[in-house]
Amino acid sequence: MSISRRCCLADRGFYGYEFFNTARASNAELLWRVNRRITLPVYQQLPDGSYLSALAPKSMHSLVARGQRRRREHLEVPVRVVEYTITNRGNAADDAGEPETVRLITSILDHELAPAAELAALYHQRWEIELAFDEIETHQIGHRVLRSRSPQLVRQEIWALLLTHYAVRHLMFEAADDIDTEPDRISFLRTLRIVRRQVTDQAAFSPRHTRREDQEDNR
Image 1: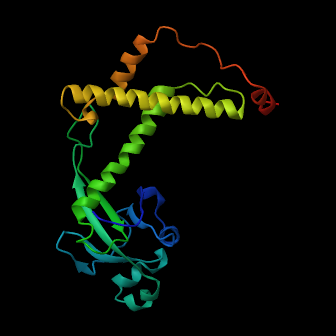
Image 2: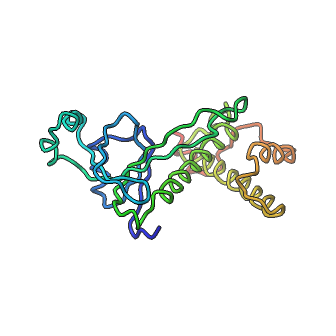
């Protein structure tokens, strides 16, 4: 997908007509997931399976169904809609799960520039950052809180958490490379447990102030 501009991705909880317009005004291309309940009339079907539609304020959604589209045309924002179904969304007890339909809207109207399959794959990659947040917040930090008592040391502790996450991920990459598989096939939690078993001298106290500016920040 050869797009020269930035592309902003967002989950379905962020959509709003005004918010979408504000984000679009930043000159970035948008690829946002939206709720299935939002009215998106089909104006033109495209060869890649997507279709052209338009956004409008919520108060204007019912006009199309009543055959009064012209009343809302001046407020419409053209978008392209990509819909696809994913499976295997169940939990460990039920790997099959229920199929889920994903609905994406994008400001990229040219289906040849950004085919629907590529946009779906791109949105899927967005979830990797969510997995990283979960790895840090749930598994690395767990129920603990940041122990430092000054702004500078809090920043230092956050950097330490991020560097630790990077180190564990790098170890996973090396392990995956050794057995010729994808890093995504390696369990972060199991790798973290292996690393922790090798650390025999873990700190059991809060970091101390070591510089004069740290003490001044804590006053």
